[in-house]
Length: 212
Image (cartoon, one colour):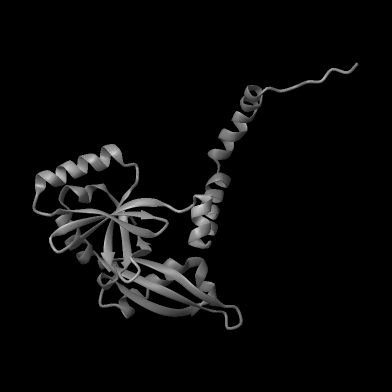
């Protein structure tokens, strides 16, 4: 009779390892991760939660001489507690605890009143180079120059008939960020970025990258 060749799980893993390693280090892998993240971000929050796609982080907000800490899960903020900004020893303890016990990144939480937002009407062709296009609008739309701010651009809507799109320009003055970081003391060095809060909903509405 014919003999059947079977393959153990370990054998399969060993055979596939070179393929897996090549894929993980390839441009295809990086592209897929980016595409997956972009696609998942378009899903409703409940779907993101179901698929485990939403990020989790610790947000820190300065308000009334206190640092307020929030757990941000799926965009929603849950209060954790607060610390006085003038107690350096307590801030040092908090810094050590965050480094030792939390693998969630920390973000500075700013009020929407601390940023500037402008809605622009642009040709649809600008979408492929959106950040470059809106960078030229900063001088015209705000009292700041490009080197004085951090900024982001968000696509709001597209009209295929008119070939136009609505884009939101979001501007954070560097001076505002520097002022906001001072009360955090040693905790400022742990920040991974800046989030903007919707005060009415107590939700994160968007993120501003400051590492560009």
